[in-house]
Image (cartoon, rainbow, N blue to C red):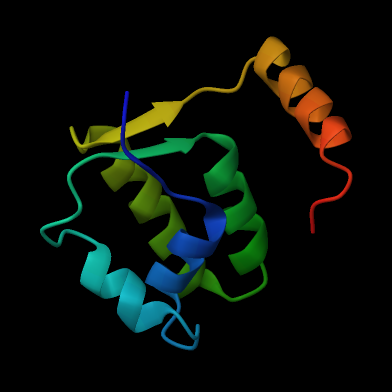
Length: 99
């Protein structure tokens, strides 16, 4: 399942005009290099948390984004399982030198 991994920073930049990377995210979103995107269902949780205090308009934008991701055939959402979560914890533990 090759593709570009989309993390919370990408979706935050996509939704926030104040984000330093907003223009770049908007240019990528739906552009010619947007052929296959992979994300996990944990990513929108981070985006929900980021915008949780930003008011109803932002909260609705995040919910709408998730709706869009669910039906976009170019987007694959990896659903977190307990096994995947703990594998991530183990990987994190093995990479203590990372920032």
